[in-house]
Image (cartoon, protein in one colour):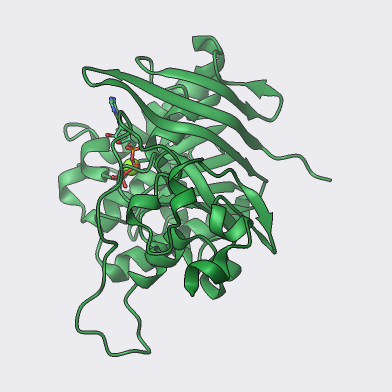
Length: 328
Ligand SMILES: Nc1ncnc2c1ncn2[C@@H]1O[C@H](COP(=O)(O)OP(=O)(O)OP(=O)(O)O)[C@@H](O)[C@H]1O
Ligand SMILES: [Mg+2]
């Protein structure tokens, strides 16, 4: 069987804070294969970005444990040279806000050349320029040969995000982590960017990790989905199964928040309550205080992921067979 390109095992991230240690990520296992698209979803603060920043060794002040393997290379505790050789080259990341991620005083072409030169110093100025034009073509930027000399502020939000994606694939990575790549964009542009990521995944056999708080984005663009809550994965399923039959009460609540085209809805619902503070987690299941199905036992022990049909679910009610009782 094929080996995953990226494999996270029991990844944990703790930040020292004045309120005590904030356990932002508490034991994540995740495998991504070449050519596969895995979505990580969850509300704000669930630990999605911290998981990925820790994966790339970008959290020097945090305590990080567990394992992150890129093929045969261990990244947790790796030296700076190893991390540099992987980051931006083998694994690259597209960040949420293309305006703050691009340098406002450099042209697009110059910034793309810097990214290429960092890992391919042998490229000449001319090579970089023609490769940059080619990359802008690949991400469907019209008049690429002209736009390459534009400054970020001369481009629309959607164009800037395309440039970020072009930069992220400039060094032919095997893994692309896209953290909320469409959040800042309007719906039509969102759809175009998602389509572009899918095309790149297929054409370049990329392992794509898509981070989003919006389950709507996931539906057409991922093979598998991991639902995160309070620093853990609470459900992992093939996307189709998650939409058809979500198991975890939190996944269900997230799905209920999606606007439905087939139903007249005056107001889109939201999940009641707020996610817990990672420096002050409740005992038992961290979702229990907000869970409409919670039983007294849910506040005693935190459930771990257990296989349930096509999914893995961390819920005492689902795995304990108490669902009927809870629904009664
Ligand atoms: N440097 C830090 N120091 C202390 N706590 C942090 C730090 N960075 C993140 N956190 C905390 O870690 C938790 C997870 O944050 P993270 O940014 O991963 O959330 P997220 O799931 O990406 O949310 P969003 O959808 O808003 O991007 C949050 O409670 C956040 O406040
Ligand atoms: Mg985030």
